[in-house]
Length: 257
Ligand SMILES: NC(=O)c1ccc[n+]([C@@H]2O[C@H](COP(=O)([O-])OP(=O)(O)OC[C@H]3O[C@@H](n4cnc5c(N)ncnc54)[C@H](OP(=O)(O)O)[C@@H]3O)[C@@H](O)[C@H]2O)c1
Image 1 (cartoon, rainbow, N blue to C red):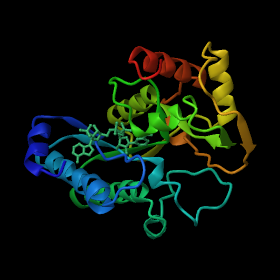
Image 2 (image 1 turned 90 degrees about the vertical axis):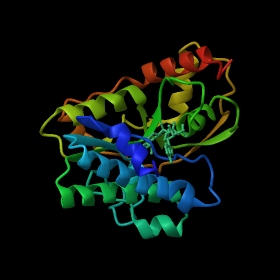
Image 3 (image 1 turned 120 degrees about the vertical axis):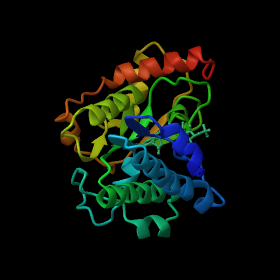
Image 4 (image 1 turned 180 degrees about the horizontal axis):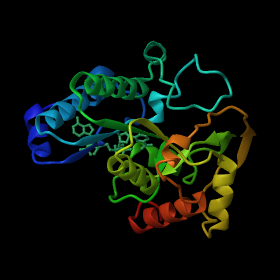
């Protein structure tokens, strides 16, 4: 992503580009500027410049709700909409480097669109789970697996914002194919409590994993208004299907035995 010529050669001849690659660290990085922020921000700008040069018709950039919810000025309790941006200084102060990287990259993308006229649409998913195509377990699936592999005996029973990777793919295609699509789109399924995730898994014939035993009631958590994306025709799978397909896939790949 940091080597412009290799990005340019990947983009050459394309009509449309989906920019997905960006570091998603698990835990803290010792050098966040180099490890997280530069690949996200410079990487995005390299992709956009290459797209402009190659006369790409539309670029769909995968951002994140991390670029949305870290906003202390958003009214408490109000569902987040596309109007909310994470506060860069707040991210820096709290050393939320991934949130900062996605916020900076998405801002840069829209600034580049305004400057050059390149057609850019962004999708902001919440925590993505679902079947994997490879055995390497990424950060969001690690978070999900921590509820199954006995990593946590006691958990806060707050609402989790999850979305199926297949529904994210649908959102990317809708954003690409619909000529009316513009700006950013939040992409999230209805929030679900951790205890409900566990109950669904137990009822879906996966009773033997090491689930959390204690749930501490917790009323905080965010909600997202996904009406803008739904107006493009987006729908989401039932969480039962996502959870069942995820576990079956992780078993098949040997990630869960
Ligand atoms: N997973 C989530 O919950 C979630 C939620 C919202 C948004 N997103 C966004 O979705 C996108 C994909 O994330 P993911 O969860 O699928 O993470 P992932 O599995 O870790 O994929 C990230 C990809 O980015 C590539 N990448 C990172 N730095 C790079 C660099 N400097 N040059 C080239 N490639 C680089 C990685 O390549 P290697 O495999 O070679 O390292 C990897 O293929 C990211 O933009 C992320 O911010 C993810």
